[in-house]
Amino acid sequence: MKQILIVIILALLTITPVRGEVLAKKKIVEPVTDSLTIFIQAGDSCMQQYNTFEALKYFKEAFARCDSSLTRIKLADCYYKRANYRKTSELLKNIPIDRLSHEAFRQLCYSYQKQGDTDSYVYWTGHLVSLYPMDGEMVAGLTLAHAKQEQAFKGIECGKAYFEKDSTNILVNRALADAYFIDRQFDKAVTMYERLLHQGDSTFNTLYSAGMCYTRIDSLNKAYNCLLPAFYLSQMQHSGCAYRLGAVSIDLHSYEEGLRYLDIALQLMQPDTTTMKAITLSQGEGYYLTKQYDKAVESWKQHLEYNPTSIATYYNIASAYYYFLSDGKQAKAYLEKFLDLARKEEKPTQQLSEMIEKAETLLRTTNFGGGKSRKR
Image (cartoon, rainbow, N blue to C red; front, top):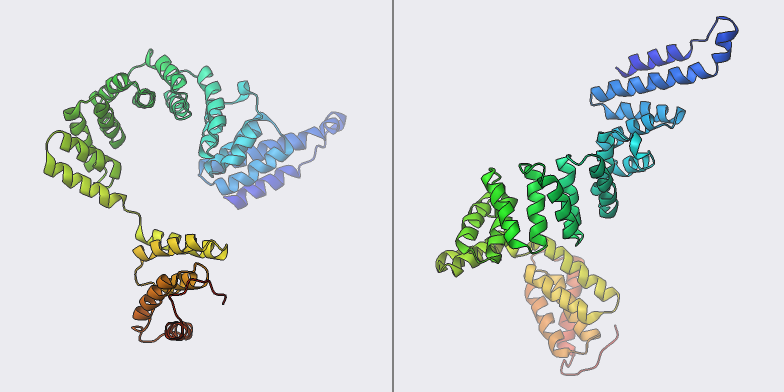
């Protein structure tokens, strides 16, 4: 496909006019116009085949020949489909709004959203919604964005304006319900969640949010009836849902059931052991190297909670206590803990052997009752 297109492009670009003065005068214009069309058509053809890699090359060539709304939109569309949202927004933001296609306008908005630039997302989506007020997807996004920016009242106004014309759009209804909830208008939020449930929207988010909302207005049975299916939809992996379900169950006097869910919540809330091992170890090293020895010891002790067989960590804590924190008693205790583990190693490394020897020497020759820091 690529080779055929290149052959066609080269063939067309080598055509030169041969008819009289009229064509001679057009000689400067025609090759540019023709090549632009050819590159755009080639890019379009690649896009139809979902080949954004080759399409990007052709659209870049077209844009280099003519910086127009058309070439910008074509190139931006290709970047968008390749998840290069920064390039997409840079190209589209400078096109006059009245020249943006609806799809290009949406890509501009979503590009800012995907970059985490909420202010720009709200700004451009506000303009889009003013032109396309029945674009429910964008209305829903703008409603939620306002609410999350602590401007729930703006989100509610946006959602209500659409709702008055179409009360059946699930996306908008979800966003409006959430905006009411964030604004602590729980009665109105419940009404919207009930509408969603009646519409058949039984997703986790709707059930969980409805359950949360019912707890705020003391409708505990309804809260339970939403939280229970929500928890199972999460495959019993959502700690917040487990906690709320447990608390509601206890309030409803289902004590054993409530305690069971609270126990699950506690287990789910436990941090990942592997991650915490790495974090606490690095924290300890960082504090030690910046001479924050008390914090280093604190981090290393926390590391031992996740990795109690970390031989070197006992040695490091002992060293910090002995040399920098003037606590001989703690230094001795951690040296002994270090040796208890280190001596069990069948094939100690040379470094570990040296550490064992040094620890044994310190325990044998040092009066740990003293309280002065020592320099190594």
